[in-house]
Length: 322
Ligand code: PYC
Image (tube, rainbow, N blue to C red; front, side, top):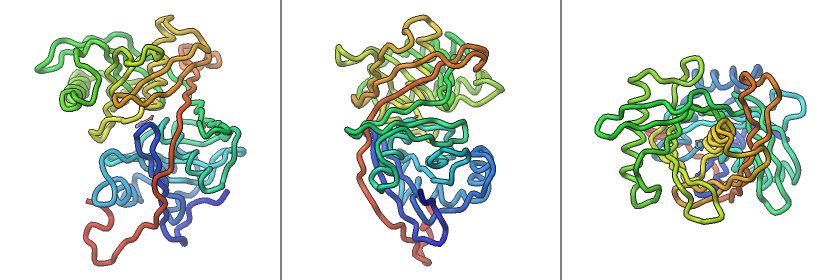
């Protein structure tokens, strides 16, 4: 497989996974060099942030887009490495983005049906492209870090939530009191931003003091055959149109910790716009996060929406973003 090189014109391929966009920089991007994916992410952050701004902020991008910078693989046998980013920074792992990346690589003819390993800054994931275009992502191990933390949210009643890792850190809350639908987006965004601020003020974090940068409000599904619905606030202030792959992984870890879902049992997770991931988990190898982790699997589908060359006009003051 060929990888992004600075000598080629910058080319992007956009897709959406359950309504949530992914923009893959397939050629012409910065060279992040060698080293681990965590080191390459740090190099991207420190030396090439203008690429993030150019692709994921206005006027070329927007708050919802998740960008994906392709790199050569870190590990032998992986098809590529990827650094995900958005309007405010880099993201550890992205489930919908991995599905979008696989659909993009298939569109470009770089991969076919089958299982492909992809290196991310938080670990190697595997993605299976099915013959019908669906993609199953085997995510990094997910686990619950804290159970039912009580949180005072200014201007709202006390809420409770689990803190869990699914490739990003999440606060998962059921007793928020809001309907999970697009008529209530203003209230959902406002409440989840206030929950995030309250977590920071109360110094409630993920493991090792990590910031909880995603808030997941949970509720009952609309479709009787599904199992749950979610609204997910992403770090840049946008909400996830998809059911959020890392958020669904965090949810699976909490269900497993509560004994509410057995290994292999299917969980159909709806997003706030009604798109669905089919999820399940397997027990993680012993010793992974103190034996509390699960291996999450999510199946969804992405569709390519745009294949374009990026233009940087020398006189454009906003060519590299706002
Ligand atoms: O699908 O994991 C995900 C994700 C994270 C942020 C936006 N989508």
